[in-house]
Length: 151
Image (cartoon, rainbow, N blue to C red; front, side, top):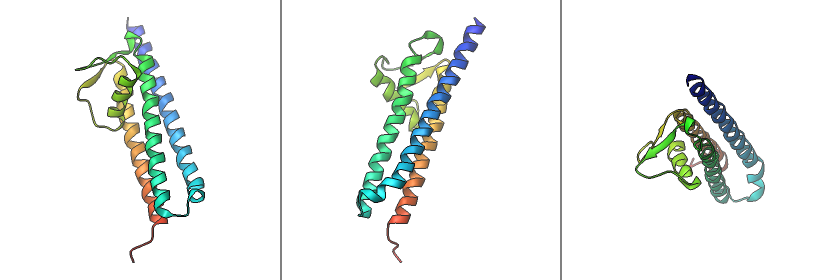
């Protein structure tokens, strides 16, 4: 029985780090693409910032869905745990809702992870915090570079 639990834990760890690698890779490539393509999209500073914000929001949504697919796939097997709460988690959209709450570090309210899947939830919260901070820093630097000074 302990061997099955150990295997489940390692599977969660590997799946989690695989998803994190996808998230970081996507985020890096999107921001890198923004550096190259935003100046060619529009010469108007305001429009470039608005496009950047929409691109970043869309990227975060995709990253949330990466984790949602991870939860959806793994939680088909009892050994990985479950998500429990005031509503039943069944559909992919339910898993995306849970993932969005974790990624944005809103926290656990109506849903709570149980069992080995807690590792993925904890790491998703850390990953989301880092990705959101990275996006905010990037946006600040782009706005600082593009927007005129008040001096």
